[in-house]
Picture: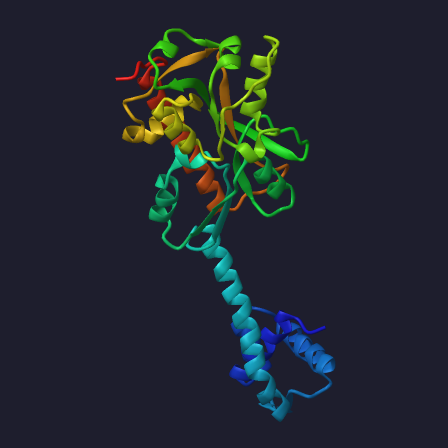
Length: 314
């Protein structure tokens, strides 16, 4: 089998015109270089050099081989450079999983920060719901992802990042007079997100448990996919909704002054974590994404603390 070392010895001998000169350029003993050329000749079934005195004269076969050998070594060098570029974050693709509401917390700031720090990196943020994202991780389609806990899979490593307190949002000051219990949730007119994932969504399951503990089922007047639509419905006063304080902070002035919020009783928190396959070595580009995402989530939580856990509609 032809090796890169054999091709390298051949090319240097071709250019130098002698095995002694080739060995000097390569830093090897002359017999070693001569042996590599002989092995290559046997492998190809053709003589590559005629020995004339102490020099070498390339044969027609050598002339034909030369451009192909140069291309092979050039391709290897280009591949090594590509790997170095990825390791140095000059290029490469970050394929990072997110669940749908993540954009409320991360916005475009995370992607822009990665691109600003490393302009050659390509970014893909994919995913709709934690269940979908975890499935893509298992299939090897993602290196890492931001998910909502819990995630129960022994093949995945889970690194908790932060949490966000869920609050009850309403346009009615009367309904925000005190923390909202499970009994009140059971009687409330609710607009809830993640209609397609209702049976799997962790927040939905925990809210349902609160209500069912009072002997009633959790019923939503409005079922939608997006948190923003649920918020828009709550602004109208037709129904109330549940959302994290961090998401409210991230939405900023897009949150209408017509709504306010109070905590749930007992308090409920959504917990976020970075997840990847157990034992996986993350690429530098993905490690950068994890760093930026984690920093952004912590900043959002600090901002959420400043909001206060209670606000009456203005």
